[in-house]
Image (cartoon, rainbow, N blue to C red; front, side, top):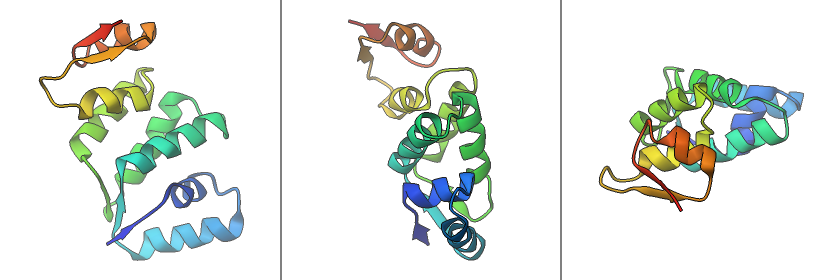
Length: 127
C-alpha cells in the first residue's frame, strides 16, 4: 500500500500540471492507496483557497476519490460522515474536528457558524 501526499491528490483532481497529473493517475491506477486525514484536510484547503472549489464541490471530489476500489482513508467512517456534513455547507475541516473527537468530548469554539451548524452532529460550546 502507498500513502500519498496532498500534492498527489490535488494533481489527480485538478490536473493543472500534465506531467504530474499523469504520474498521479498512474499511481492511482496501479497501487493500493492510503490517504490520511491530514492529507484530506490540506487538500480541501488547497482546492477551496487556490482553485476556488466550494465546500460541497470539494467534498464531492474527495468522496469520489475515496470511492475508488483501491483507495482507503484513515478513519473512514468519520471521514464519510464529515463529507456528508460538508455537502450541507459545514466546512470539511470543522466537520472532521467534530466527528473525530471522542464521543464524550464537547468542542469549544469562537466560531458562531460552527457552533450553530455543528450542534446537529455533536455537542458544541460557543465560548
